[in-house]
Length: 290
View 1 (cartoon, rainbow, N blue to C red):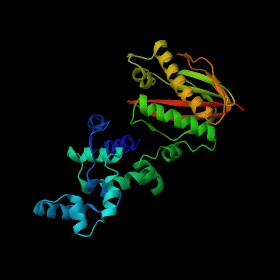
View 2: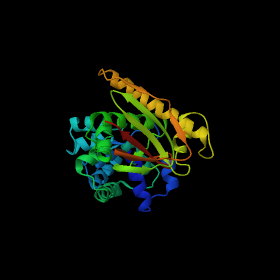
View 3: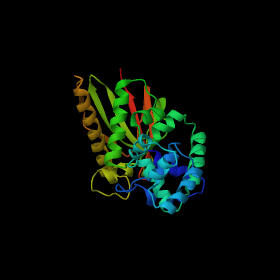
View 4: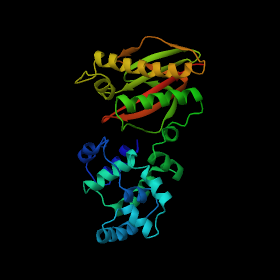
């Protein structure tokens, strides 16, 4: 999630272009972040110390971690901890920026600090995003109290990341009592939990799902594309039902519905979650019934 959020910030600051960002994502699975990169992001070492140690590496032909330990900047235990982050998706994203010469290591920490301040993230929230703590990251954008709704949102985000766009991200959710929907697909969950789940967007926003959930490709959102979105919602709700069944919570699902003309819905409990994936914007809407 942070790869796109921080990447968008870099584009806004004109440090990189949107084309460069799109070329970087998703990051290469085989890439590993370097020790010095992880150390700077995790505030273990400063960029100036890394630069100093890099000179010694050139002279002694040692690895960076070994040189940092010999110089007293790292312990064996701290190096082992750093190495566990080599496959962290955000660390790899920063490494990609460095490898392509789009940023220098000296720029990383000041830019991250400015991004955090502009976004209003606490240190704990920033740490959750960096380390891809999905539960806490979702709580930043969707601070719901309901355990069941949290489980549904978690299932939705996990499914989008797995099947649609692994670098998807959220905006702050909000509540409403009435809402005009755009083109949409939806499904009613019944039983021990009673929720209607919508995916809606103006224009062609739902191509974010329709063009990536199956092998079909649509030029614009039509009824076939919406049918595809409905099947995606059915997939999410099916996974949600399976998870609930482990706790003896029984739910059923009606057939998905969809339309090119969105309805005006009114309910005291409407939860709206803006979602960004594959270059499109759409929103999930949860209509909760008592």
